[in-house]
Length: 245
Ligand code: GLP
Image 1 (spheres, rainbow, N blue to C red):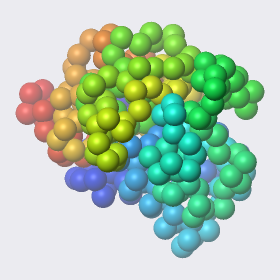
Image 2 (cartoon, protein in one colour):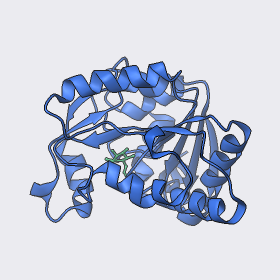
Image 3 (cartoon, helix red, strand yellow):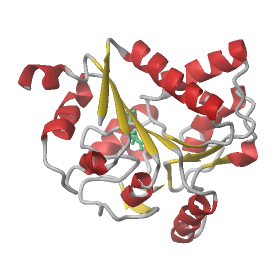
Image 4 (cartoon, rainbow, N blue to C red):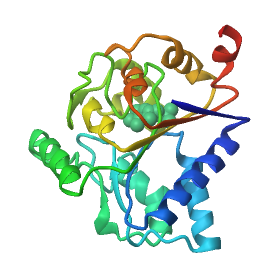
């Protein structure tokens, strides 16, 4: 894993954007894996700014998001579809028909999960996957204990994750209890991974990622087995790594 340490959230977002823009310019038909949550918001903002200023084009780009809550419609402001439209897609020249996110508003989420896995395969797989990390080491919505072989599936969200995400909802009760997520096996098939880590609340997770064992109890640890992972981490996230190493 290649680690780039940066000063703060702003610099992490800038560096991540520069990384993505370079890939998009080199490969105008890139299959780009996207993440949600608080971490990549700054990255998306930089992509929009660059698109407006330098006209970097996303016309030929296809995107696949990691996950979606079950039970929220696309129009629900807390759905990840809404998030992606609102934070990125509406402001770049991407063809909306080429932006894929699991649909959590279906009668048969299991069927949706299998179809999503096939969809990624049929497009030739993901070239570059952007990832954040949960404080318990989750990637996508793959909670501790998820098999490293898992494909896109349905998960019961842990209390930790629901509490962490409650800040986006009116109350903890409003946070869905289930989600559809790419599996760890799905993520590991990406040719390249860019993991963003920001803030002191992630410092324990970052430390465990670097110094802990590879274990299904800490999903992100699987990334040590991937041949092309780049981590961009800010100083606050690195606080334990720097003190304890
Ligand atoms: C969320 C998402 C993940 C995200 C992680 C961290 O639950 N499903 O894809 O990476 O948790 O979120 P944040 O960036 O808000 O800390």
